[in-house]
Amino acid sequence: GDIINKICSIKKSQMSTNTDLTHFTIQEGRLIRRIIDSSKSKVETRCTKRGDNITIGTKNNRLGFIRRWLQWAESRGRMTFDRTFFDEFTQFEEPVKKSAKPIPDNELTALFTLAKKKSEDSSLNKLLYLAMTMILQTHFRPSDVLSLKASNITLSESQRVYTIRHKTKTSGANLQIDPLTKYDYDILQDAIKQTEVLRECTSDKKLKDRIFIYRECHGLVKAVVREELYSYMSRLCDELGFKTTYGPYNLRYSYMTKVFQNAVANDLSEVELRVLTKHVKLSTSGGYVKKSRSDYFKALYNVMLEDVQLDIAPK
Image (cartoon, rainbow, N blue to C red; front, side, top):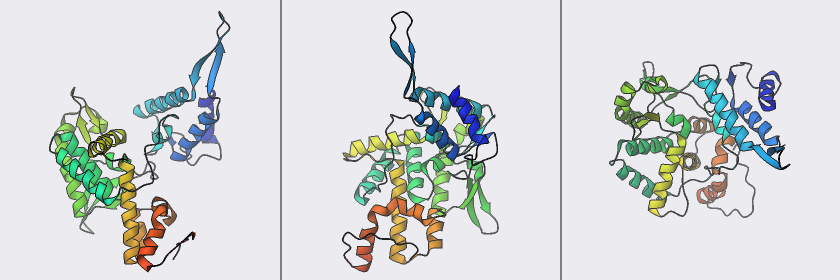
């Protein structure tokens, strides 16, 4: 009860980033998690018969309860949330599944070769392979790709290119509009064709327009979530005998790293970098590749950099 009261008080405080009482932002999600994290690790009560202290709740219990409570409110249309709001509610003991590390080219090639081969085995494998390809080839975050909707792809008459309207980590209730390359468009059209029958037969209104959906073994139509894509990529890595297990975020880091490599090699401007990464601040893009900057500069300028702190912005 105390935690729920504190959540309500967030909206009334200066810490809130949104005045809409029915919409919660990512920042507010972090504040809620911080409230739970700062509370006592467990709640104890005294057993009247034996006088023993017993645990009746933990941080994870409270985190899970708050998450389910908010999701219940969302499912009934009483509240809305930023696209990745619920990502902040991962249980405390769960390992972080993303690491700031791109996939080496030789392993990346082997990973996609196996994924493409397995895409011929089932429609779900085909869908997961297409999702992996979109994440690697575009600036879209994994969660953005998996939440794309078919009707949001339109042909821009003025520019004669296809565009897509979609939610992003920071767009909130609004949709961001981005152009699609012919290659990206073909990938999405392949996925749309793959799941067309499922959209027609499902009774779930939320899935009627989603691109990345599949049918479970018992017939229920579900949306592909990031955890399922991570598990699939983990199995591919195990089969290939990789020492490192890669997930969707590693594909994103690979994309960002290659964008940065291309920028250094071809002297791209800050504007061009922002177009490719969709980051307002270049420091955000740098966070994906900061471990490799020295290597790029050594190769480009043929110089040795030993124990030198590089600050490449804004030059």
